[in-house]
Amino acid sequence: MAIRKIVMYPAEVLEKKCTPVVKFDRKLAKLLDDMYDTMIEHDGVGLAAPQIGIDEQIAIVDIDDESGTIEMINPHIINTSGEQTGPEGCLSFPDLFGEVTRPNYVKIEAFNRKGKKFTLEAEGFLARAIQHEMDHLDGVLFTSKVSRYLEEDELKGVESE
View: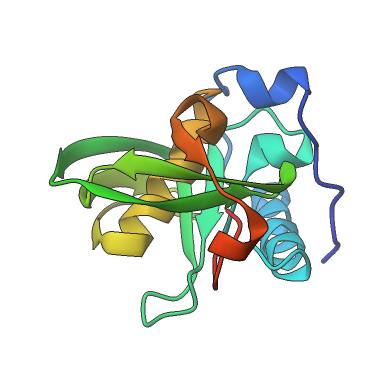
């Protein structure tokens, strides 16, 4: 396992739609392990493959709750509902935070590291983190959804995604 370098904005890989994963092998498993280590090293709650320079539909989320680490390969949203507005940050935008409105509930379908399809439902902060990481896979950055940027003193306990 290794800590990968975080790609900082501006970088082309951050703003393009990623290609689907077709091979579920040991290389993918190592990449997922490296992504987890990288996310933890940088105090993040999520990481998408383009944030480490890889143009593939792979993302992980771990908000340090009972859900554990969620690995999402080729994910897509099935359903959303409700609304929440809250602070977001991004490892590719150090020291930049903003208020973003997203659905409060999300249901997704994705594949795990072994190529098995699964569905997942999430609410609140977990739903926010999942949607943030899935946006990365479509080349969508949180800055395009910010309603207002936040000052450092407004950020009590905000995690970066």
